[in-house]
Image 1 (cartoon, rainbow, N blue to C red):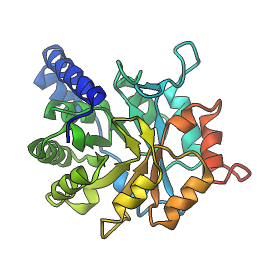
Image 2: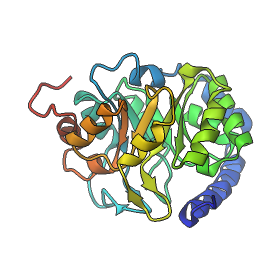
Image 3: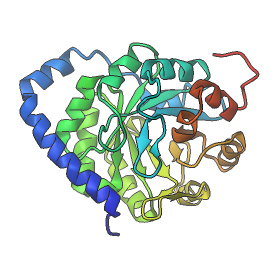
Image 4: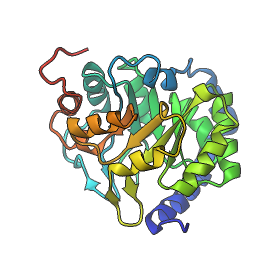
Length: 279
């Protein structure tokens, strides 16, 4: 399947960005930062074994996207550590942080600010196309990385996934269609089960629309849904209940939460616990 134009543009920009970054940060400097980064937090365990609710939420910090535009406008108050604290207090199991600047308004510096504020594992959500970025992610303090099947060849999926495991990190493999789901399953077969999750994104990258049933249909082809993450298009407690009813117990939610004045309270409503005490 051809790469959607918007994704192809982002990938090309990211490759140029990585080349510039390599020149600005030497291999030795990156290694030194990794050495002082401290131990990682167990992203997979937090979302499977240790979750306390029927559903585990990866709550996302995202300012904009190519499909939605600005979600939290440039002139609004924006503090990733405050938002992360609110997510943690209202039941998030992990935090996802967009670090791409040009297309998503993110920054790698957000990861440390989040990690210094909450005890939850942090997923670096970006477009990783080079093993250098895996090392960079570890140096930034990320506990897990996103690897998007539509952005990577089979060799790259294996290499980047293997490097993440070497660095004691976890992986969220993301797919949008059946063909790439098969590729991700093959990539996962080379890794320990406790090192990765499979994310099924409900967004159609060509039309930029979402369909909640997409994750339900696609995950039905897997024998085990316990480590499947449903992504995009989730905005109500009824959506959560529908996914849980079909065996999907992990979700990633970003845009819906970030559009609300109080993202933490929005998460509480999503989980059906707005009238309950914080965790």
